Length: 83
Image 1 (cartoon, rainbow, N blue to C red):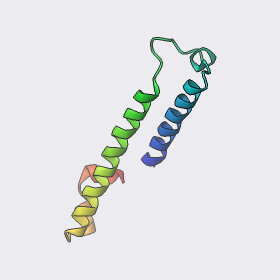
Image 2 (image 1 turned 90 degrees about the vertical axis):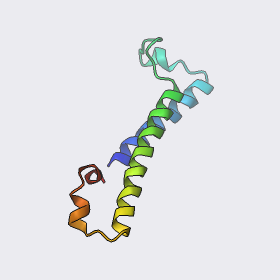
Image 3 (image 1 turned 180 degrees about the vertical axis):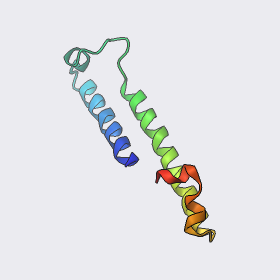
């Protein structure tokens, strides 16, 4: 579920990049304040940071399962219940 949210953020960053390269004034079209708009780099940074956290939690979960812990012990860890 979280991956879909971050995929949406990534595609939003791609849209902003495309609009900037095509010289479309999307700030004016969507009535964003020129000083408070998100740049494509900001969107990509937020997306990459969140996806890194999700992949890190997923790898930690796989490491714990591969180590031989049973499923109830792994499910008892609150941070790993997000996956």
